[in-house]
Length: 414
Ligand code: NAP
Image (cartoon, rainbow, N blue to C red):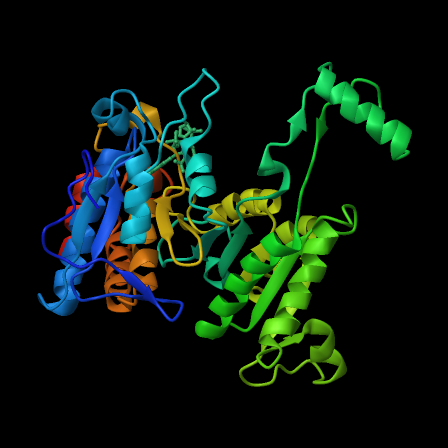
């Protein structure tokens, strides 16, 4: 494929898909998007760390060939004001695996969030966020080492579908009339109205990914988090379809929590993943009081949005929380924080959110040695109290270093 501004590396091979799995050579092409605000600082630092870790892990036998792709302000400068060039979408689909920094949503002009557009255009239906505690990271928890889970958030449906009607508009009045007169619904005059679609299709493909992840990685449970006691036909249906999917497609590898007690006296049979569910509000409490009971969480869009940030706070906050948006094969890994514009180009912020998103990416392509090296070096560096400003203000006796200095120290510790 030929592109206007994207230059694919001359060496390196594209990832392909065979038998429903990605096939990765020893010299794959991976895409990266720098992002806006602090994006260039954290991308520069992370690229250095990733390349150094790959070199350390494989001694030249494996190498990433990076393809720079463009979204956001950098894209607008290159593509005559286009923040969201079509060829970037094509290139992501071609390289299959990419990583991005944060993007600004330009204010005004009815501009949709670039992140939301990206998820929708590429149908990246699962937002995946591991919540991992690293020794030495400041945490408000008494036993932060008990927090270890991975959250799968549905990324395309729910109140994020954008089906909303402002109070006082003809569309709102038409819908209100229909709901009152034909459906017998009762609500206050002048209410704004929103629709929350949750489908069996959307739920099942998300839960499938979560259960498969639990099986592939030896986790003991998948918890469906929902608000089904109140929203029976959306959140409650999410729960029911989740159980249904597990029984239909993973019947040999899973049991329900009910079965765990009724048939196995509470003792999990070797190799079985327990499927359980919890109501969203109690889940926030449980994740503070008994986090060790949860390993894989599958939840709907809005619950997942709240829960993932709350859980990130338990293990060091947004500065280090990694994430990915995934379709069946195409995956875009990303820093979960925003562009923090007040810190742009100051070489100040913590690059770890993007760096750990890169670790997820290396795990995804099967290069687990790389992420292990980076994780160990991160713990060592934080253990030496060499940290960026965000950790420094929470630690006694820390040495505050800039973004680039943190990368230097971490590379030294690889
Ligand atoms: P933000 O950029 O995440 O920044 C909020 C605060 O979080 C910062 O002021 C800083 O806290 C802390 N922070 C963020 N990144 C950090 C890092 N790498 N290291 C250390 N601390 C970090 O949120 P925002 O200010 O609400 O949003 C700014 C822009 O980002 C908006 O245009 C928004 O649309 C966009 N955004 C993009 C994404 C994305 O691309 N995925 C996600 C969220 C927001 P202190 O002030 O305490 O130092």
